[in-house]
Length: 177
Image (cartoon, rainbow, N blue to C red; front, side, top):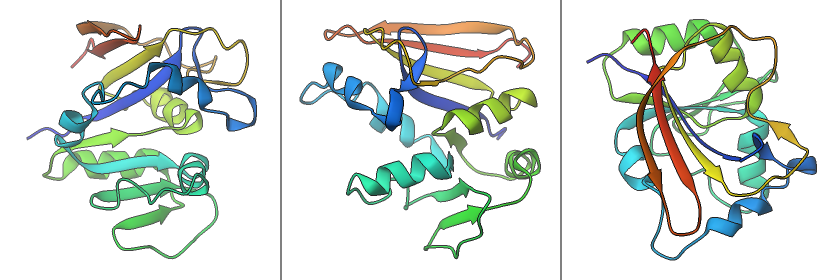
């Protein structure tokens, strides 16, 4: 099986994954009981998660257990820390890690953010698919999902889904896949 790196993330219509001070409250405008926007089905297709340290710390600071502790998880950081079960704090080269993971057998690899990790992977054309949930809000400022000065990458549309609360989910794959 060819493992794919899949970015599954939410963004405002104007391209922000967080407001200033890492505020994620705008995501709540699409919360709906019983609706997970395909997340549960998606996570069944992955056995490995890559996430940035800032994103990891944000989840932990909100009082949650790390939701991917049941998978091989790599927290990309510059500061070494001891592993916590299957959660590894990874300080080496991200491209080397992803190439190694993609060469191994297993399910797909979930990139769960944040923006620094996404943009580092984009520089090396290492994201195979993009599942982006667009939240119907213009937040105006914060952390942009896609930064400038990265290579152009052509994508092919796989699907578009719209939901009652106005969320639109775009699924693309790299055109060269």
